Length: 560
Image 1 (spheres, rainbow, N blue to C red):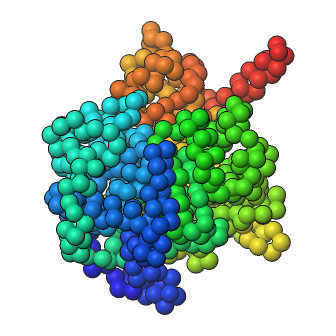
Image 2 (tube, rainbow, N blue to C red; image 1 turned 120 degrees about the vertical axis):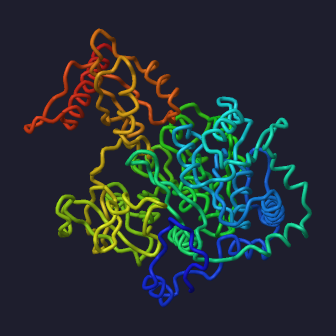
Image 3 (cartoon, rainbow, N blue to C red; image 1 turned 135 degrees about the vertical axis):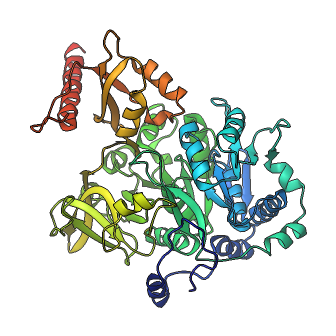
């Protein structure tokens, strides 16, 4: 397995020693991700590959469409190793666009449709992106106007490619269908034949969970990403008979590795919907009968509570329920697996049929036997024995060696011996002789809202620009559905009244901050509780909001 042929400045590649070690173990394929999938398509062109409410593409149809689109991207002027911002809703077009970029060597930057100017502007400039994939059929947000604004904020964004909806003759905008129709298959194949196929090269620019502000860019390479995707599929016994459905944003790392991507590269069928209304999702689930599902717990509860789905509609599917295994098991009666992962390169799963204590008290074990984890003291870095809680650090075939073009961050993010610092408090627990890991909290200052990690300091910095706020501290508050939501404790500016939730949301929207990061409760205070050393105490604020919520629940129960 050779080292990368054309290194990208700012990307930290595996060392020669790591490359030789994984080569000796025979871990990685010598094919790129699109080549591995093309082999499946050539053998089974008539099998369904991706379905949304508008229809189904077979493997053969998707192979032809992605080849033509990949060639069209090159004909448009994009070049291998160019970057493209992805803001496409879950759909057949997303899968098509991703596969086409992989074939053309264009590197997708895996942003979210929920990201706004603050995130997209920075990520487009930092990555040097030349293209922006969007949808214009989104009723709640004008992505066409947004993309034009982003071209001003990041002048390198030369091309806007509309995956769904009309381009309306805007300069620099191209519709997916028009690109595909504008090139024949033979011409597209000729153009793609010139693309260097390097399994050690970057496949996608994934994003960190955002626990230290705006997400950092994580290069994921064809060989190791394909290895992790296939390993996740093998752990759950996925095959061409797998039909997966996930409501999570498909460009997130977890869906690519654990939900739809592991199905896709096993030759199975991916089911998705661009408009995840409860009614639409329920109809799609009933129509396609997925046997692997990942639906957020709040949404699953609504589907059941509103009688849109019944438990018998779900029992045939393995339900991936990170953080909510017991509740999902009770609600659905389906086989449940728990999940822990980081885009930086570790995935832990519980197995289907795992005992209740493994399912509910742990987050499983690493799916990759070559992943090495260590629990250490968060302050000293000293290794801790099994059973003690400390920061989990890890390294392995799929672990990142460095964030893209981020030398300062890289000095903080890794131990001296090359382990990735997770920032999560965990422990190793043996059950029936097998070592599992438990999740016990976070070293970092974040709110974990249903799996979305929100950096408190980022929101605090933004809110401090509000003229009515003198000081603010954001903390997690417990929530029975999302696990945590954000509460902002605000000291108003002299003579001012603290903004309410609506006003704070409007202010953060004006700054271009994604909505899922906004506080969902504001408590006005005159001062913050202090630690013994005279610093504001977030743990005491967490205790305060937890007590307030308990009192409110008790009062509501008494008056019911």
